[in-house]
Image 1 (cartoon, rainbow, N blue to C red):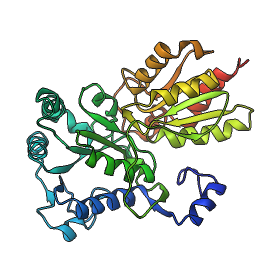
Image 2: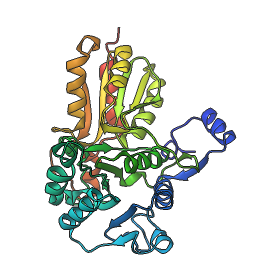
Image 3: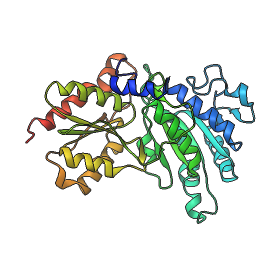
Image 4: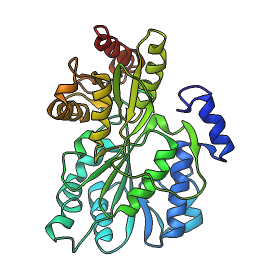
Amino acid sequence: MPWTKVLIDQQDLEAAQKAGLRNISYRAALLEAQRQLLRSRPEVYLIGEGIDDAGGVFGSTAGLAAEFGPSRVMDTPIAENGLTGIAAGSAMCGLRPIFIHMRMDFLPMCLDQIANHAAKWRYMTGGAVTCPLVIRSIIGRGWGSAAQHSQALHGLFTHFAGLKVAVPATPYDAKGLLAAAVNDGNPVMFCEHRWLYDFKGYVPEEAYEVPFGKAVVRKEGSDVTIVAVSLMVYEAVKAARELEAEGISVEVIDPRTIKPLDLAAILASVKKTGRLVVADAGNLMTGISAEIAAQVAEKGFEYLKAPVLRVGLPDTPTPASPALEADFYPGVEDIKRAARRLAGGKA
């Protein structure tokens, strides 16, 4: 199976099949997680624009409105700010809404509700009022979606105290992290890259949770660490496998959540390799790659044998032209160049 569809090697694939794990898509994993949550927790409901359409948010909510009815799966008008307030208010009253904002580009219209209310009420009330609101939102490149429909603003939301931010790359993590987010009791930004929906992986049928703040090593290595976020996990794994032929051993870390961030896992890897590349699907300027680089420099400077390098989007709006997109979006070759640069003088 192509690397873009699965993150495990043939040996792991065979073991997973023997264990009875299924091969399903990222969209199917999200759909299954929501169906299980709706069945098991009566206080869970879905709300968002177009979630009861035939397409069902790229297939991730397909059929749920017919199964659970409009009181549990609510289509809404285009009124992001007001509806975010409704969802947040219902969460403070004991419900567990999953609010689906299809385009993260328009979440800045809701920042007051998210950053000043949902994120703050637990702290301001000494825990008397909680806001267990989960916001599913789509990040990243489309197909010529241009400057207003293809932004990756996940790093922005890590700035606000009180919010948690998940960036699942695999179907397994999409299902497990969504369940964990709904059950957490705090507001969670759940960020899905649009190119991941067709990617397939092995997912248990039963309900389960993936803990926040626990990174995973996608590939072990000894020369260079690559911390890769969201879609860039796949690019990093492919780069690492191709670099092996050049004698460069790369370790790939998938943080899975960027707030909380598993800095301990990242530092442990950098201590082993001495070199770090951070690959993100978002902007370099004040993005999560900058935060990871800064924290490693502050808390693991003695481990570094070379400067930290970052791979991410340039500081310019997204172009619509396919030719310009090819230069704008980083990928495998950019990661390989960064790793080669660091490993060129390895001791």
